[in-house]
Image (cartoon, rainbow, N blue to C red; front, side, top):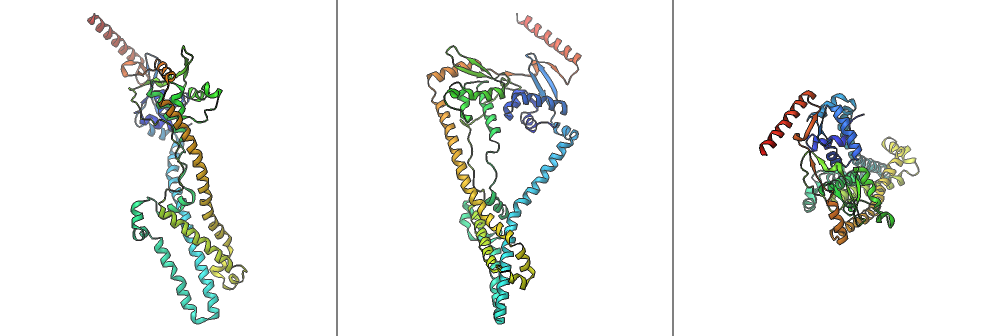
Length: 427
């Protein structure tokens, strides 16, 4: 089984020497998952275990542990290869919708021009050339609209006000399907911020300090007895303590242990859920995509009326016959191109309304904490009694798996003798 990517990233961000609490906080992982994952990673990547006098364990990894794992696991090699391939494939998928749109418009209007030109030539041979030229007059203008310099020449003010890093074909995909879930990593952020809050308070907190990062706190009994703290206790192996006044506080021993002095992390007062955006494309790109969608749809309707009886396609054949065969695909694409964004727009409005409600509830709980009454202040003061920080330095180690046991015993004995000598000298 390949190592957990979240644990590997946490180890790298923390400087390759970590405790279980460090990784659990950094990655927002369950303490048990972090512990088992670190053991597995140390075993697979040749990491070392360092044991302190207190019994706490530190994991030391080399900076090239990813190379060790890559050589050991074919799966990791395939994952990295697939990630590179998928970036290319996904980009091709994204631009394909814009390419299909342009191809559909060209195919529809060229077919319309052929049909109209053919029907008029039957009536009046003299007018055929003029009509044919007039029909094609539209297309150079269309391609000018699609040129990369279109916004720079047509709408310089709009281009300066709102720039998009997307090209036209990427913007079409964004117009159709958006740009992904802005809260895809919401749960990861939730637990990372909760872990940071616990660390910032020395590993001891009250429920009101965690509530702004949670949802579905419940009503009545569940909220009064702080049932919503159970997932937090389970994830970070926390322990409740009851004050003489009957107030409950929570402390987390594993999160109080680190390999370096814990610096206070900057954490928002509440978990913010980001609203969905209709598209990250510029307003000009969105208007152009919608306009071309309308041009495509109207053209499909006009073409449908010309091909309605089927005799035109039979008489002309060639391209017209081919388009007759795929007409329903062209019409379906035209309907979908306008229908999908329309449905998505209303869905986003509904979804953002829900997000606003959840954010408002979290802000309210954060404000309640900021305006803590006397009772809550007493509760927080009681929690501080359990706060602490245990920094494991190299001088605190009694065993390390990267050294011979006999060598470590000799070093330890010499260290003890030096400490005793120092005490005797001081006395």
